[in-house]
Length: 296
Image 1 (cartoon, rainbow, N blue to C red):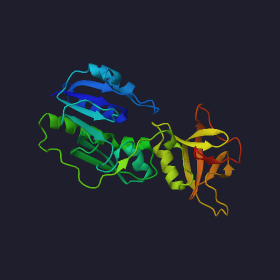
Image 2: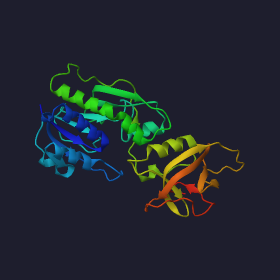
Image 3: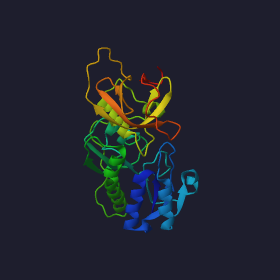
Image 4: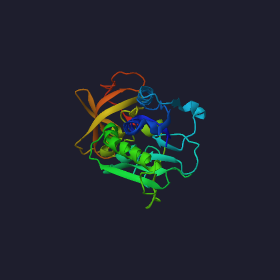
């Protein structure tokens, strides 16, 4: 039974690889989406793999030209898909019903969840609330970057994609089951959510920098005099007693690397670039630098 695939990101690429390894005759067509908010959306890799295997492939903007399929699977997809009821399945980037919504993996890492995973669900009108066909998890330890966390989930995406193929071909007797437990939600993120709030702890800011790194565009620090820099790596350093603590102020610079006061703890910036140019932002132009939120 041929299926239509709606794919984005490295997870979508690995889902495609899994289905191709099973039998490419299972694929009626592939729709590829692009995401310019990330450094690498893997759309080129997905298209190249489709062409290599002579698959019918469409760009998202040409989705109206797609043929019909018996079932559909969406991986890392961001847009609505017009499909008959109970025929569209989604692999969602969390252990539902927790973290319904947007950027669930990023939110999991910032919140220091020790278990991450993905859920294969039937799509319905209330996003990410459909019944679950299968769910898989893996443990994660910190520090961990978003790239490392994604890589740890790729085998899960491959397994869930094959579960979908087995189910639609009648080789999996289990039926999707309603979600149980208290749902939580993860909101969509924009550029303001990339700006570090220095009133938070150094530990949380470190996790935020790691969670917003490649393939995303990185966390931002706003210098109220010089503008934004993108922080690529940082590390917690032992706190000191500060009599007039002011989060966001640089307390010292060692070998050109600034240490910034946080609401709790200190954070040393190891690597940073100008937001608009691919040049290092370190050393900072002045020692007396204060980072802040956009509305300060």
